Each structure stands twice: as structure tokens, then as C-alpha cells.
Length: 83
Length: 151
Image (cartoon, rainbow over the protein chains, first blue to last red):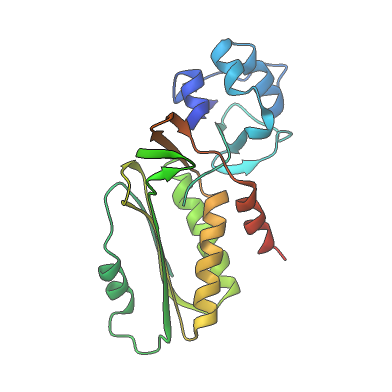
């Protein structure tokens, strides 16, 4: 999987992208988020408030129950503030 | 067809309108909206704004929004330009132009595109202010404006 982070999620984690193999016990976005949260303090603060996290898989918005696969590009970011 | 651009450099409204209209004489009205960097946020002075975006997806989302607008209103053309990178108070951030035979459709479509863009296009603003740096928080009132178009 290719993981992408934007805005404060990127700043908290400390990088804008990373490659990761999909762990066997993880099937959807929400589970991936819990898995990432356990990786350290930065990840923990990035995903602290789930209401403030939006996710796009292969550049399409999805919900946390969206099923993911090894080939996916998964982006995590806060609610958008453009315009 | 609408022109969509996500770019770092500035844009020229007059040139954009001229490019859209060309020699056409069937256009009854042009609505433009330009968003600028404000120099204040609450009681703090804004010194600089950094706009981050999701390359690829930002363009895709703007295309989807414009396609929806074209399905809902009889647009004769239009342009959406959104900038990214470092901006300063007074700088232009975003441009929406809609062309129609009649004004109501042009006003409504421009308003729809702006409302949707604010909540659905992957851009994020970070402000440097006299009170420190912070990511701008999404406003509930903006989501409500987007929802109102879903009726």
C-alpha cells in the first residue's frame, strides 16, 4: 500500500508518504487507522480525533468501513478548507 | 466544457474572461467570483498563508464539481482556477467564472461551485498569524452550504 498524509496529519506523522504492506488482520480503513495509531506518538496525535479525519482510497472519498487491498493508495487528511 | 487549473502562479481575470468568451455572441451573462487572502483571522493579523493540496485528486474533484454544475444549469462555459503554495494578504486564491444565456443560472452555478469546492476539493490552508501558526479549521456553516444544494 502507498499511504499519503496531508496538512496536520502529515505534520504530526512527520512524512508525506510511506509504503507499507497490508497486515493480515486488517481489512478496512478504520482498522488501518487503529494499526497506525499504535506506531507511535506522532501517529497517535494525527489520528486522535477520528471525526476530523477524511480518507481517500485511490483518490475517491471513502468511509472508515471501506475495504482496502495491497494495491491501494490511501490518503489521510483533515476536512478540506480550500476556496 | 469547463477549464480547470490547479496552479501555483497567479491568474488574470480579464484574460480568463476574454479567453472564454472569444467571439461568441450567445452569452447573456458572466459571473465571476475571486477569493482573496484576508489579512485577519478573528483578532489576529494574518501574515502569510500556505495552501496545501492533493495533486491529481484536487483536479479530479474540481472536474466532478464542474460536471455536476453543468448537469444542473445550462452553462455555456466556465473556468475554475485554484492556487496552492505560499500566499500573502491580498493575493488571489481561487477564481470561478460561469457563462450563461441568463443571469440566474450563472449566479447559481458559480455559488454552487464555490460552496462545493470549499468542502469537497482537497485543499488545506495554514495561516501564519500574530497569534501563531495554525491550520484553518473547516466550518460547520460551509458544510451546511454544500448540503443545501443537495435538495
